[in-house]
Image (cartoon, rainbow, N blue to C red; front, side, top):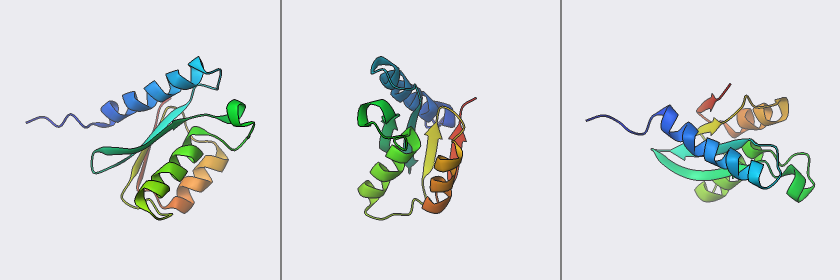
Length: 105
């Protein structure tokens, strides 16, 4: 049986978040965090709405995933983000100890 939970499957979920951002006047970047083939966090850029330069999709998703898991480390998780993370987000992902990062072009 074919596994439907591929990187492409979850990247499409991140793209939906990017579309949500665009519709709200945000920079259209989306992210989802997955563990055991389950989406545990999803977000998009909120920099305009929150008036916060750090409210990137990745940062929002890291926080939501950590809250869901009840701890700050995302060791068994994968993040799917529609663009390559900036230096701030890459640093946060490093410190979160996330297992895998998949980003779009």
